Image (cartoon, rainbow, N blue to C red; front, side, top):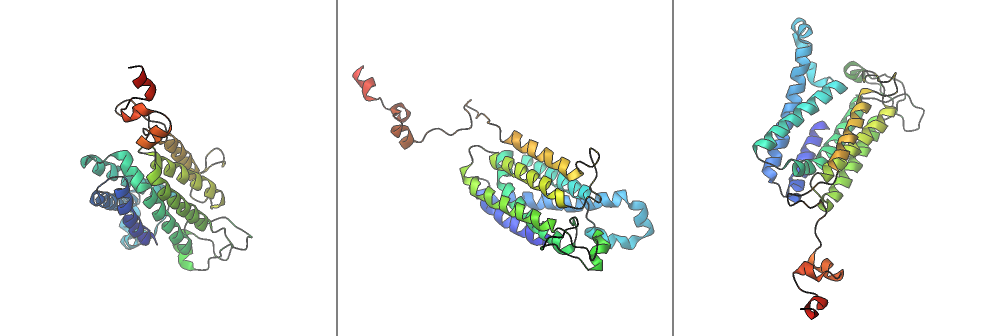
Length: 274
């Protein structure tokens, strides 16, 4: 499901790149480089942290791809973002427009990844008596993700996948209507942060850290940072000519509002007074 999410994200990114005036091939290359950096970098970090154990048990190297942890995911995301930033700067790609193009594809990819997590039992939820609760019985889920077996759990991965899918659709709809570059990316950061913060309420806290005596966990702190970052991106910015982010009136709009000067013509009163 993660691989399917990557494929769908790459396909959608080609369309969003055209929508914001970017070269689709450059966006494709950026996505591939960022993905490679995130996957390889996070696994190399895992090897570096556990190299003594891996020297004693070399066969464990075969299972590195199956290990899931919030800190590992955060490290991969950071490495991928740095690689994407470096490529974008090297190719002189406008950062705000590039972020707008990637917002919806990333949300779609995250939605697919969460469906995969639901099927694998990773990132499982807390105990639940709801009719839609899921109960895992596979020893593979318990072995790789520590999933409790035989206990009804909140399908929090499904909640998160639905939130990310909804966010992806909203971002695709809003992309042609953005007022200024970076608006869609700002909304994506805020939406992702809100979805992450809320869904953490039903996710098992094991291995996710504890802040303020358990009031918050690590991913919720990251969610707050995302919301703040999104708000900063949504601030009104000024164009190089000193104007704000609002686009100028179109010609017909100017005429309807009585601003004939917008068209470069004189109004009747101006003509009468010479």
